[in-house]
Amino acid sequence: QVQLVESGGGLVQAGDSLRLSCAASGRTFSSSPVGWFRQAPGKEREFVAVIGRSGTSTFYADSVKDRFTISRDNDKSTVYLQMSSLKPEDTAIYYCAAKPFGTTQAMRVASRIDYWGQGTQVTVSS
Image (cartoon, helix red, strand yellow):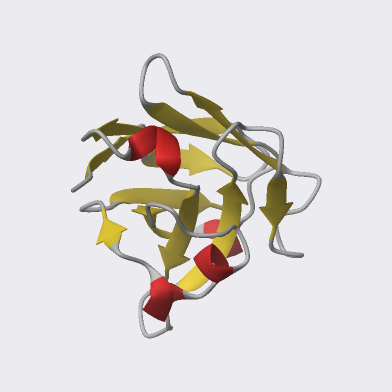
């Protein structure tokens, strides 16, 4: 069992930066890759980034590559998403996701996720 709580969302201007946090509880956190997804109004939930158990393996959606950085601190049971050069099209609810004992590849598909956070709103104005 993993509980995920996101924070750090808000309203920013295009070009600004923002850091999201995902605080996790549960004994299996260190055994789980952790990812970020986002969902804009009227659109499906889409993969953003994922990080492996040790933090050495990361993957990004093409739309955020070179602008977003995912990291994790297993001692604090927290995963971060540092977002820079934000664009209006980045506006969405951002969700943290986990899949204990899963793979980073499986984590890129929303239907394969076992645990979700409640989401945090990110709004980027032009």
